[in-house]
View (cartoon, one colour):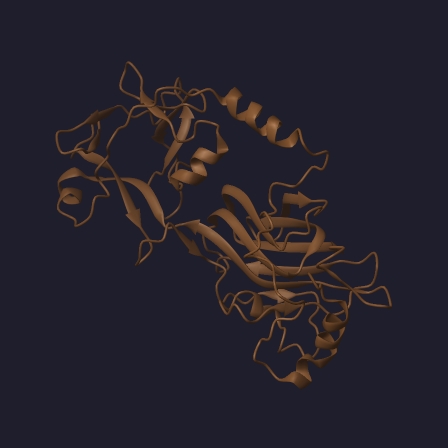
Length: 333
């Protein structure tokens, strides 16, 4: 489907997703290829969505007419329908976290199952975190998140952000559209810069659930016990869906709604050449032979923790075994 993305994020892809132009016959075409903004097939319980289709595809084709009120009217619609941007958020946020306070489950939990229970990863508290029980070499830890009620329509996930307490060097992200069959959405095989935050783009993937499968701990920020068992931990996981949606609404009605969801303004793009983006990326990599997975966020001074232990405000008796291990192995830089 067609959606909105923050300008800085869209520009960073360098693939032209942020650039549109009117064709000679009035279609709204994307610079990503011969794709035009069109009407898709109606889904159960919802109107026909706006999607990108080949411009030669006549099914759902829309011809657009800019109006004096800065609206974009779908030609031939009666009553007149205009392109409108609506929001699910009560504030100015561009995304909604659909994982917050969901009944998340884990393959194991450290200690009594409360202090570092799976729910700690989605409670919105920056001082709490989920930690796995010791995981034997060759085995994995799994964190599963339901994102929609059973039988409900899948949600369109734009991205997933993970703040790791005990980061892995390798992990997988799987998603499901029906709660039965799982698809591999992303595989991370290394963490050479020992990052502790991940940003995984999913570009509107439809799913009712997601799960993280953690394989190996990071060599510096991860946790390996003297026995060889490993620990994994997540401070927070945020599953982002678009808070703003494109749709067609009555032109007169939208013009009377406070805000500017029906107003569109055009700027001139002097030049666009995707090859230049690839050349810049090659130049950035020229000084290093290490391939860094694009899902890891750069390690900055602000992201580094002063020590290997974060006080959660919970009972020290509950945290003592994990605290003792982390104080022995914490970094000193």
